[in-house]
Image 1 (cartoon, helix red, strand yellow):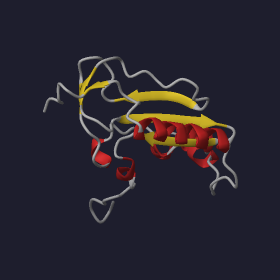
Image 2 (cartoon, rainbow, N blue to C red; image 1 turned 30 degrees about the horizontal axis):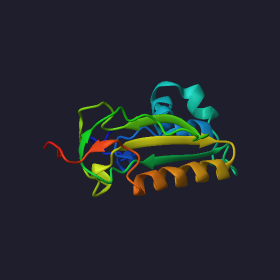
Image 3 (spheres, rainbow, N blue to C red; image 1 turned 30 degrees about the vertical axis):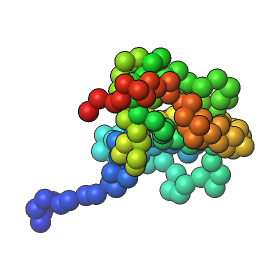
Length: 151
């Protein structure tokens, strides 16, 4: 600017680098990443954005942090649980046999993410509850806890 450099904060840190764009695109119609780029590089797209958020969401979505309730070594691939109607993306960390599984103790040690999307909020809520039940029971990951997790 004419006064020198200006610091602009977009508050993107609260998402901690997690890809929430799909959820925002489906539920709201756009996401912060794309509209920020539009503001700089596509004036027509930027001007076309609504001035206010929608009165109602276009669908229901949740980004569910996965929890590893025991540590050790993954015995089998971490496949998505069957029967989750709203599950659209599955991103466990670890995911392949032989990888170490660290116990989830806080937000930074989560064991990946599950993206849930559906037109019906009740379906998303039920799938989220089912994931939480699997996590609490230690059935989300097939872990050999006798071998211990590697550091």
